[in-house]
Image (cartoon, rainbow, N blue to C red; front, side, top):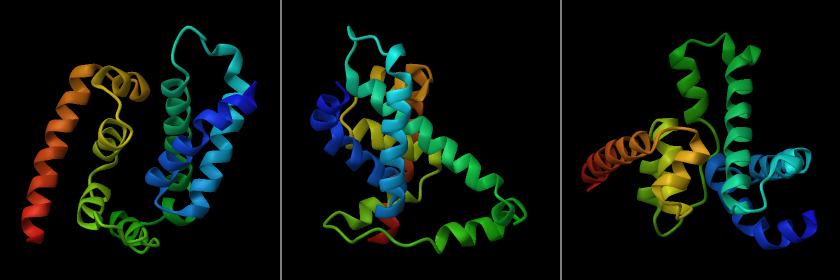
Length: 160
């Protein structure tokens, strides 16, 4: 049964993992962790609902858990805010693409806004699905998208 889900949703899930982590190595880990968690939680999946939003929620929550672990790690946990920012900035850059300025602007957004933008625009989820995946009200998604669009517009105008 899981093989069918992997065949039909694997490429999109890996794309999401790559978008979230910005690193092939970390995307591979997130991809595997997501499928492992999905397998462990398959009994809680309601087949009357679409599979992809359920899987996306698992992926996003797995990603968030990994971020929390990183922030609690001894190296990052002992660092002050400036050191944390320098560590984040010195992470490997994503591969260049035709939309690299937009990607850079999205990557520079605060994490909550970045996740919302990725799900809504890059994963083509509507407001309700995005809200379900992020476990926030639909109004919060709308607010985050509005704020993100404003910040993206400012960032792209500064680059011109």
